[in-house]
Length: 295
Image (cartoon, rainbow, N blue to C red; front, top):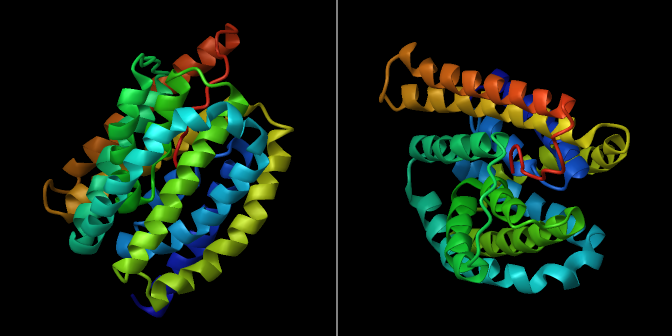
């Protein structure tokens, strides 16, 4: 990467992490889900992920602290998920250290896009056997997080479907995410994934987080939370759709411009779901929905 490209990549990383941190401050989640789809266009996951994980240890600790009063209500329900994280994080960390950058990038987008669209569609399927599902869900989330640093979409789908109140949802999410980020940070250290380049990214990301999180807390008091959340989700669909199209083209699986059919389909689905959202909102049918755009 030449000097001009490095400068562009750095500016994009600062901008996207500032935006993602603002969303995280407003909604309590979404930092990785918004950062990664754009940042991996400029940085390999093997370089980017360790920096994001270290930042998320701090962000998730802060989230757990501000939602600490709800922890006694939900910690028992989150234990099966936390227990499943360990094998998932181990396997995912090993995959990150062995797979090539292009494959990891494509995997990130392939997993993320349908999860975002499912949330945008307002999928609600309560699971009766919550404890039984918790361990395999935790393993899957741990694997996904270690490879991509993204876990918000599947976590939000699960917790939202189970009818958590707003504060309980945030506390449950914080418990799981502080566990996964801490475990992943340790696993990365054992595998020697922290490099000088990775640590240099912290100097770009940390200031954005320190500004963005309190800014998001300030803004959400003055904005319609549901509309804000849904617009962020729509933004993510387009970014992930573009990223998946580029990844498929770069891997030689489809040609250019045929690969952009993926972006077109994702955009069409998003516009349809966005129209339905605002139509329901006008009709007074949109209630509290904590599903994430990113994370």
